[in-house]
Length: 87
Image (cartoon, rainbow, N blue to C red; front, side, top):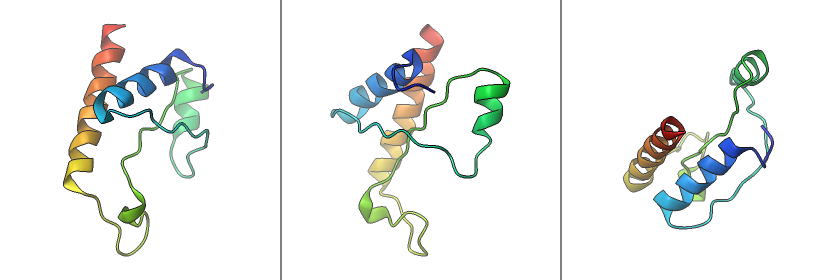
């Protein structure tokens, strides 16, 4: 999905609202997800909203997540769904 897509803007705004800071947007591709089928097959916009910090040791044997980060991730997803539904 293009970085200037309205959906990416929605995800960006809701992240800013939940976390209280400007989110870091990084164009990338999912390595193992079925995103292509949704984006190209169904024509849906795709934006990931990750919940991690450097101390989480992502994909390591000691991978972890802080409860507050997990809670904020839930709030962010709820905000995305709410804002998307309002459109």
